[in-house]
Length: 453
Image (cartoon, rainbow, N blue to C red; front, side):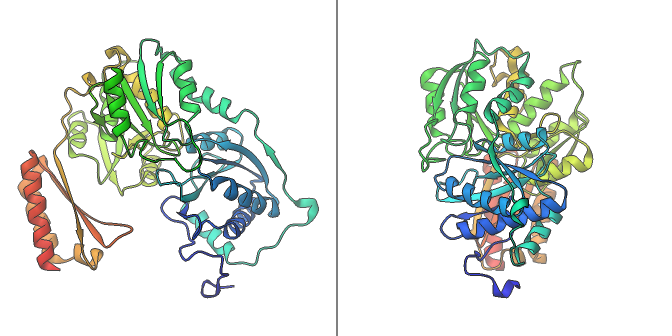
């Protein structure tokens, strides 16, 4: 079978994307394709010496169907399956590593319920490598063949999976007493709906819960880290000390201070690094990894403190790859993916939130005090619709115009052009010392590009 003669059940874009395979359930994540995917992954993993896999999912209604299809595919390839039910993505990564099994999460992260996706972890708790994904894609093009009956895999439940992950998270908060903390948590009606309340309540916090009643279709529906209006309002009205919002699969977070101000991943990285510098009992960070969207102010702060900084493409998998290559332990992106390799193997919103709370406990959990000396550069972003984003970005006249603006800004600003991965758009981002300057320069560049097209 070749790619030009695929079965009807193969979606058009069936290959691995930036974070596994994801799309509309009825168009892409159909059960026939998912069974074939499970078989292909199982076959490759068996060749790698891995004989069992943990399956977790978020709270989407389609998770039941996809879970069953994956289970059938794995078993047909001779893989044993351990089902854990709803579990945050980083929880599955932890369970895979701690039990020496592969792991798979059925989730479309912060997308609405009508999307779903599948992402995989190896026995070390890290996401599948590019090379492994390509091997699986090649096997997907083969005719599937069920192993002999004696070699079929078996399915079972992984006992107390939730409890194991809860205790793992709490192990990084052994000195954290939250009994004086009033905390609002928004679980996005997603995978953290029962895990997060248990962890924070067992640490003593007074909790106000938002979006912890999933029904299969309300995941990320006007709630969670990508929709912070509810948690901002709840923090202010309840006079809480802090608010923490998660996305649907629990790998990224957003924090709200007691005044309702939103703090992003750049703020959280600053807090972790700046408080680390004040403590003699902690190992100093050698370097931090951010992305192209990381605010210039964080880079300037790190440079002042003599800490290396590296930027990657947008996406936590690129942050992780850079951390591993440089042997560093902390990185993240403004969207709220925070990777702490001294504790986890992937972005883990619960671990990150506990580390932030540990960092500000001596400030009576007043997170705004930890940010008094951190002022982010104003940022203006314009989405420009064009016919050929990549071609236009590489145009010599545009590169020259960008260079002129960068020279004018010097170290006190930044210009970034990025093509959208899903639309014919170019994202124009300008950081400058004032909102007006950032807006004016971004508008100037957008007008220049429109004329050049």
